[in-house]
Image (cartoon, rainbow, N blue to C red; front, side, top):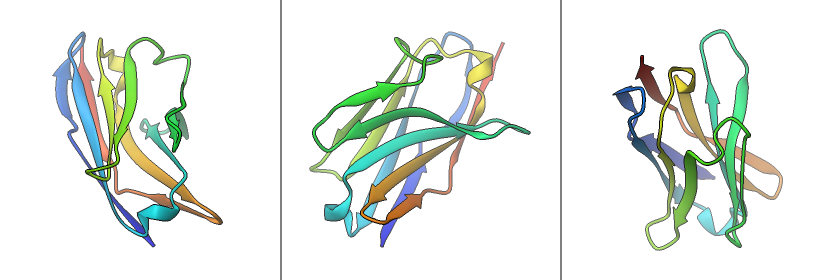
Length: 115
């Protein structure tokens, strides 16, 4: 089992920045892939950014150049630095961790960007 707890969401004006954190605990040594997803009201959950154990990252086109995913293995924490935020970035952001045969989710953290 892997437990994930997100934090760092909030209300920010367009053009501002936020940093989301995802603290992982449990059987974290089996995690080989982590990601951030987001879900806006009435829409499906979309992939935002991914990072492998080797540090390879990938981003959705909508956030490239604005968001950065990183991980601190010593702190068992995943981050999402979000810059130049836009109203369309408003959503609940979820942390995801993948182990062989299992996928774990946090409870989500709300990000609201005002225009």
